[in-house]
Image 1 (tube, rainbow, N blue to C red):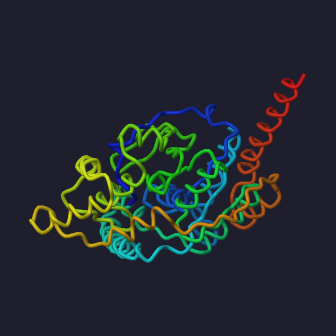
Image 2: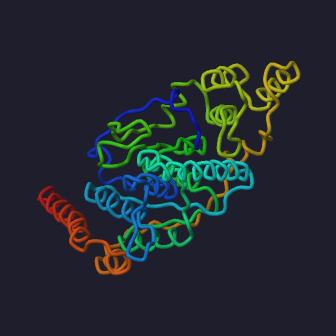
Image 3: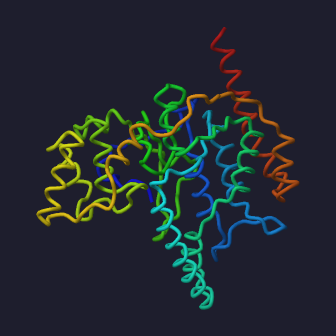
Length: 347
């Protein structure tokens, strides 16, 4: 689900030339779930190999990553660890939605309505341990650093940007911002269109800068965290009913400090003006402010191991060797061009 603050966030469309050569910390789970949801046949069936093993995640991961590498981006992928206990309610709600989607998919299948089959099938997503491990294996074969976060991947990504080891976090969600990410890039793909429930929409990579966001809204990061809690995060999905992004922004500006804000909210609850929150705001605030991250990560880019990539994709999962070779050659072509450019500039 993620944090819903789109209407408050100042965004800037960017071109790949503006981020060429920069290190981007990719929220791996967020990205893999996108591939599992969108890379499907018309009836909702995911891509599979000859052994009926799902390969949608590998297909999306390989072709998008190689395309971005061929554009000069230096990617690192950060994987989620153990989810915080506060996320348990979110997990239950997601499982309930999957059950409902599964039942609706069965009905659509019985009626033979492909559009509905696709719609509901993409809501029944499971990222298994096997998928995670083979994704890491593929990335390492591509020479890309893989970082295992102890808990939330977005929190780890945000920390890496604050340390200056990455330029931005790549994720479709906004959660990296209250975690303190310096910059967030959405729609990091060469594809110009994205499938939505109502059809296709044109997309462009967009940059969100935390400092600009805070200056525009005239708040600080603590207030951004409070605003997020009021609206609803993955740790308190419902937020406080009746409080949307604009009203939440007004409240954090009026009361400024977290303690004063939630003390005022308690008063509104007693007066019956807002429903009683079903969460402890202090715990959620602390989770955003001091998340469980590791400082002992290593970022080292390696050469692409073409044979290993082909072994994983072609021998193990029946990918077209010609298509894989062509994708890998794009990286080689870019690297040669970059070296020639550097030599010319030297002389």
